[in-house]
Image (cartoon, rainbow, N blue to C red):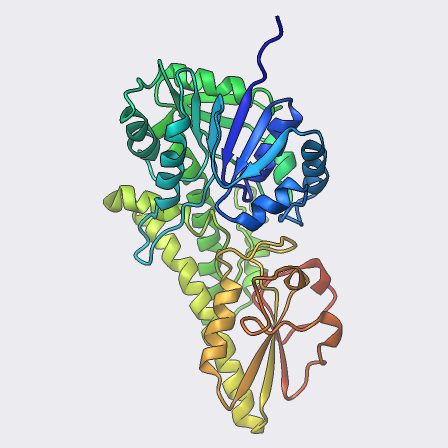
Length: 407
């Protein structure tokens, strides 16, 4: 007798959910993708990926949709394993907003049956898997670890390499019970080629946050050194370069702040969980936020000085709007914050424009919000033109800049 086809349901078809759905479909599962955005659902069902800058994802999606192994809907369906891959932003007070996670688990409760597995992949504060996922499932009188298996498994991928790194990067699976971790491992084993480590859900949640907090702290040190050197009137790039000749020193490259949905967000989840024990993590967040304000003030001072000396209306071109070089991801980008701050401050003194090779592919960034100018139409530097590099896209490699905050 043939073994029944296993079914996967992925809640959230964003940066992580859609590639995950494609990988499981390629592995032979029948996959149901769920998203609250009808446009995404419509496009997925015809094989069109909205993540256009993820290599090989479009081809993978077309392949599995054509084969009938992946379909999308705005509502969940019966499955053997449910993956929750929804956003977990923070509120204005830097406290976590778990509304999407709460909505996701509530949406799948009517479809749960004995033997099912529920896996949370969304980056979350410690205890989320137990208190939000586990407690919700218990309201249906299921016993965790016997009737329903619940686990937390964070991703460790980089935009532009997501499909590949979901397969090649090691994974940590944290179960609410040891049997939960073992059951979840059976699914990941089908798509992950690297090592898989089993632990508790709470440990896995903290590991993900520690990884990104570690990176945030290291970036903060580099950013603080850059501001220190500016105060001392010495080149920070030379200081860092020479310091890195020490065999046990490896200072990172400073930038205009920290962006992306992970490093700029995740440390706050640890601060929320243990305010008194996260002094360094909180300080690092403040340094990286301060670096963005520092860049705004430095550009403002330069423009004010130029305007005072010449009396000529200035045009400022900000090069790079994504949160990272050569990546088409604008989430939490400090460069965008810098643009809006400068555009608000300058009145009769200057106008601000932006330059980014990825902007033309972003429909949600209209010219009214970000006045993008093509690289080929940028005027040369002059007494009324200031070039500022914020992000070191490869397209900018051979250009000169009035000010450079990308290295």
